[in-house]
View 1 (cartoon, helix red, strand yellow):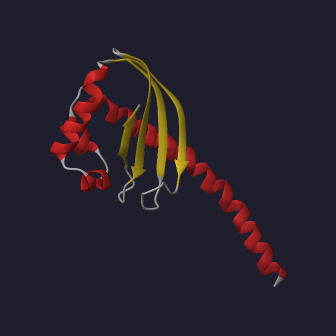
View 2: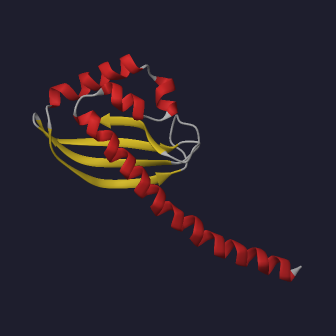
Length: 139
């Protein structure tokens, strides 16, 4: 029995670093997906951002409604003049969202008509293992 308990502790000790080691890869892949998604967002292309978004995002808002919302949120701000990622945090749950894998990424962004804004982009891991944006907020 003691041997079984020792094996369990050893297995748990070996698995913990492996699970933790996967997290930086997840964050890196999610940040890459967010940065790719921001390219059409910066161009005001709501259709392309919707097409590249997570299935949960697409189920929550129609392509036309999203395009209008993106235009309404971003057009008054003008063009992006600078953007710097300031944080990225891996999460297994978020308020109001089903459990899964998410990365909450915040950028300090300067726009043509707004000197300081915080953009939050939230990619999630899809069933196929890819990372796609499930949420976007700018304030």
